[in-house]
Image (cartoon, rainbow, N blue to C red):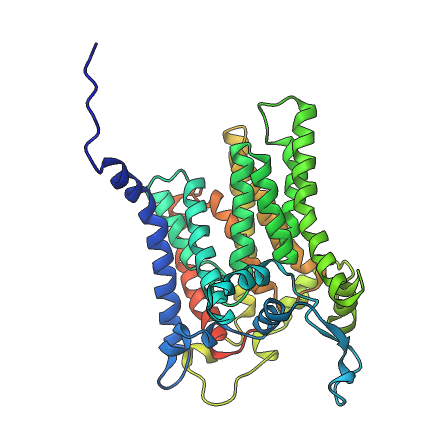
Length: 407
């Protein structure tokens, strides 16, 4: 019998480090790029402070998430507190609780809510790169390296660094994909629950899990496949029920979310998505909020860049769908993770236009990050072109964020 050669001391840790360094490097690069964009976005001195301070990561909706973390939900008629305000509904019940509840739990460490909120987003972003790396096979090649690089400048990715739940919901969607790939329906359900409790866009996980009976759980007989798909989707949907329950506990109304959407934002009904897409195409970013004072060159040239941004997002989802179609024809099938990622990417793209979110599609589409699972299958020249375009667009969108243009 041949002698077994023992592994040298430290061999396993070194192997793990070789496996882990690409997602960590991608996270560091994403922060470096975002910091450089912040410096180029604010005239005068102090832009670096804006990025590294918690105030530099907070915009508009961030205050609602922080208020939920501090004191929970509230809803009231605006004129009860602000006599000159329109007679509409005010409060924070238009925002989901998953991210604020994590921030509240983290505040038990003694850190401020603002600091915890930033730490949660950054840890979720690191987790996103780690789960994506596992889904890519955890092996560094040109294809996987370019895919991670695109992730560092992903469209709308500046919100992965902000006091927003986009990194949380995207990480949860990736965990959901990982659970489906591993055949672990409990893990898939947990990811779906967190996603649907963190942001309305997370509800796409419920639909994907329902469809998973057709492409996942292949080692099980059909009745069990259907049962796993249905059970995981039902548990994921409980995130929406939990959200409604928390709002009911605070306001006494199960429909609090629907009320504020109709009253204050003119939303709630299902829209014709193509018509809403056309509306978004015609509304420049600069029409919402234009900062006072002197604008840097980058910000000034970003204000009318909504059309290019929308074309990029449309191009990305089409590339993902086309890649999936080509693999279906040439290779007679996708693997489980690719099926899940393709369905989620298409769902994330369509969802804002179904709801009429003209002011937020550019940040909601950041959750299409899950489509990077299929980007590794694209030709290298397509990946390179996508990286170049995404990098340019990231600079423009990031500039608008740090200049205070974007909500």
